[in-house]
Amino acid sequence: MAVTRFARLRRARDHRYGGRMASPVTLDNPLFARIWTFMSSRETDWLRDRRRENLEGLSGRVLEVGAGTGSNFGFYPDTVTEVVAPEPESRLREAAREAAAAAPVPVTVMASTVEALDAGEPFDAIVCSLVLCSVDQPEQVLRQLYALLKPGGELRYFEHVASRGARGGLQRLADATIWPRLFGNCHTHRDTEAMITAAGFTVGTSRRGHQFPVWAPVPVSEFALGCASRPA
Image (cartoon, rainbow, N blue to C red; front, top):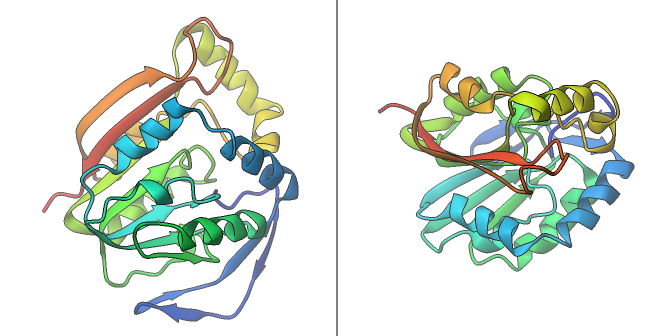
């Protein structure tokens, strides 16, 4: 979950973690926290399988952007040595810390956003799961992620993306009305893979699909699951 203009931010004094200076950021969005916690507790097997697929083969130090309730944590392979997971929303962060305690790999949940992380020791991989739709400035965030990734490192992404035709029109309508206010600033009609490429990443593998039947009038049905890299 990323910082949004619909919530109240409170910044505390700087602290240091693992050689990386970060500004602790807390976010207060109780409506979205309740909605997302409810949805996370009822994830389908299909969604859990996509999360697991997105994390397959990872190793070393990993940055997970917008940890939410920690739904990914149980799927990290044991070749991962550390997961750093910023989450600004206080209620979601509490749930994420509970999930981290049961994770098969070491996970540190931080009161921060990726935007507040300063450059330090780069990560071997970065994971984005259903989060790039909600950041205010996705192009800027992706450039920040590029800077935080080792040359040759991987960006793994599982994201809702823009559709064409009638569903694209539905997405634009949803984005202009109530959808972002209910779902933590989620914008459904973003060409996320084009923005990943524009930030300097090279997309290696990618596939598109639908979470719901193609006829279902749901703005967030189409997704992209892929792996991009920072050139060595």
